[in-house]
Image 1 (tube, helix red, strand yellow):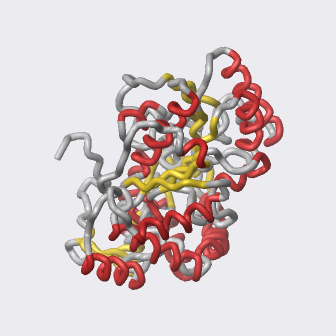
Image 2 (image 1 turned 120 degrees about the horizontal axis):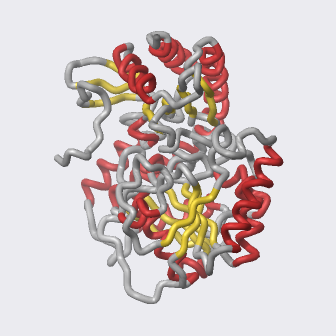
Length: 416
């Protein structure tokens, strides 16, 4: 395995099995899972409905590729297209969010016939050559060599940066002015790619409506809007099914990318775009593993469970309780700079109380301590990885939210 393959914890954990919101390691330790395979186990571990769908499909046929008709893929595409909010939507399945964003960039640059891309500061869009080239988070930008020319825009981080002191309306106006100025100094631009809530960046989010204000500017210049919903999609934010809906005044995005939660651990990613954009490619293309019968069966079962059990509503209710509980805990700990988020997507930013500087050492220490207490969480953030990331499966119960908050409080109290 390569040296650059990241592992959590000083003594890495081998997870052997899971059930509901819990997992077990090879030594028999049980953990409450508040990170869900990086927001991928969306409904629950070992969800019977998904396990049954995978088993039954595997018993018929495992793989065919997109060169042949595939009923589960067509059925899932129809459902995703209807849910996307994009008119005349077309859906292309991939194996990951990285590949989905790579495809979105291919579509945008082909449609607009330019290699220039706008991206947000502190962003993360995957690990492929093109996705890394539009990533604005230095910890994950592994190469500066790319065929794309990327320009970075203010707005995704509300609590830091040159506009942090402004009110929400003034913050939005300043970011729009920055965008206008940036576009005015460049040639034709293909698209703006943006996460409605930044994932790896530490669950940062702009004021509601910022991307709608951006969209008005983009429309005047014919620039496409790509909404990266790999982490925000499928109701995780509670208030909306897609993150872009917090910025819906100017309509849906031209292109939407998704992955992670839809497969509940199976490898599914995808792109939704209006037909004019999706159909702009003139060369042949297929996907060998995107749209696999087994992963599509899993996605259909998982999506059905999500909708039938109103897990978006659960994320809103239980996530709201968890967010308030964590804010109350954070108010009593001087290294907690901010507790932010929406639904079951919560970030806890740690900083030096004297200087306000990011405190990655404290973040790493709390991550370790939480594991010792039986809680798995994540970390991220653009300022030296100083944010604890909390994102449990959307079926989280109130009792489990309270338990997890108490365990996290114990871990935070180990800071000196």
